[in-house]
Image 1: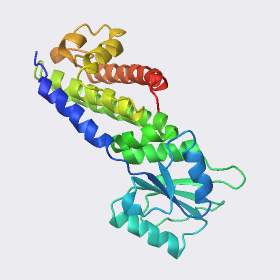
Image 2: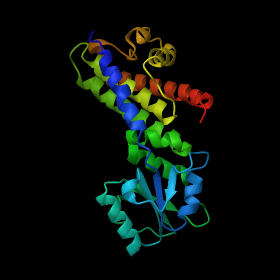
Image 3: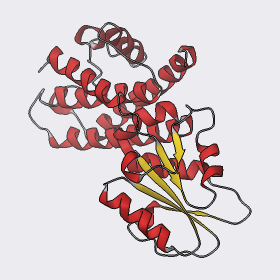
Length: 260
């Protein structure tokens, strides 16, 4: 069976350390932006969600619209598109309108008298950012759970597809395991937990022990749910998802013990 090169593992750690240095905040603009900012940044790091920030300087822009898009709305959204900054639009009122430069799937409705649907907004932000949102999730707790949901689902689906597509015996091991390793480390980053070379074997062994992955500690990354040519998509999917959920619980506990 093919084995993983330790240098590849350290490369992933380095990649995540670089990603953690991305301290761009979440930008909120438009009517009631200050109110939404307070709800999004609750229990988070000061400055992680900001009002009045240029779209080019933000990880993602949440634009609040009061009814039909205005010229100011269009100007802001156009600037975000030019800067390649993802956008989630929050449309207040009872009517729906086409929002320029924003996909309909990235528009969240806010009904009068119901308050901002913060969980739904956070979910849309997580979907738009994906892996790029781990650093932000570490500073904005409301994003953490939906972002981990997105990461676990996406990597599980990817491994499920790979489990079916790769027919060479043993060739699937490095591919599936690298995806699982990256998933575990992204979940750690989303919880603000730093993983270094010394802690990695211990963490992987702890997370994988409950699933009987005996080779995990020896291989450093042996968190493979199945082996050889008999890999099936459903098993690869389920194994990756189980690992992701175990990592979620582990790092939730670890984050509570880590000073801010």
